[in-house]
Image 1 (cartoon, one colour):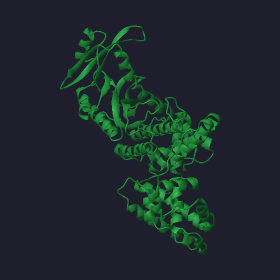
Image 2: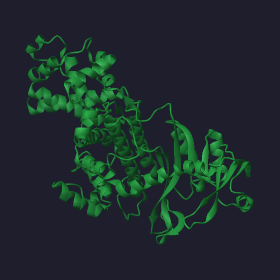
Image 3: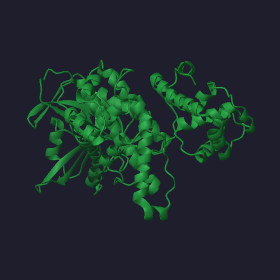
Length: 524
């Protein structure tokens, strides 16, 4: 085709794809079949085509569908259409073509320029869907029932293959929706920036040195530190960044739903806590909050998160930045309401920092069970002084609310017997000889959120000395995104290889990150 005609054809394709997305512009997610039903593919000019009884348009759409879904083989495509007959109808099929028909159409009917057009259409649909912020229902990796014989003989090979398959699919799913403020004529691709940041996170490095070591590893041209930071500094405010990562967290949660890794019918224990990022600069810097003196500073950036704390499934549902004027009960309310829209909550384990009347009333309003340490306010101190080893006081007053106060004993690291106080709205029997063990076991689940913080900081959080809060916010939220993707990948590997999920990880966070930044995005 003549270059001028080729450009005209591409402009026409782009315009039609754009106009078709306009039909769905109020929706956050659409089925690929819904989209392709509305679009008109190029017309057939090949007289040999009459040998096939299916229409040219339907088979052409089928190949676009296969590419967008990320389905690799014809057999998988046919099986998908058989399982989703309504989507086959949308593509123009009343019965499903076999592999021979699809293969003949692809290899003998389509010419070289037709295949180039098809590839261009697929890429353009993905790019324009990103601009509209519309998710397409990609085919996500779903675990097959484990095969014991194969599992024992070739477990390492299968683990490696499936890890790469999962990372490839994940990357295709989330990377288009990370907005890095890139211009259309930028020298480096978005994936180059993302890969470099993952490398910086894995090596716990700064942008300057991380960009240099990344170039050495990759052996090609990649963005430098100044270029990366230049684009991150373009964010106007934290609300815009929060919305970006909120949509990314939602994408990952939808991946959980599509792969059935979390049961909608089952209630889950969750934990809420703060994490701090130490700061050594000026106290007047935006979003800096005070903290207990530690490691030479009494200043930090602060974030609050809510995590599912079930062993093997310690997923972060939401992370929020906390500023000096944010009220604890409002942060708590936002986290819990966000979680309740996605899961059923069994119990909430919470840090003593939320032990105040306004926070406790949030639990009452949302009808949620909670357990937290009771700080030694005057009234609690008096009870600790006179209480026996096991004491339960129901409806203990605190300003305009009430809670159940539990006092139990434990042996500390020095071998001394000390009393611990807990606040809850659950009922416990003080005559239960195992009361202390039960409480420490239940509250021990909260340490799952501490583990998640440690992994985020050591495996997924790049270093920085920047005083620009938005760069810090981007890095932290990016670490949460990578952590959640790692948790989901590990769950899928457990289910695929063993059919169950256990507390140990089959895929380490370091290996996951390495595979993620070295692999090209593509279908599963």
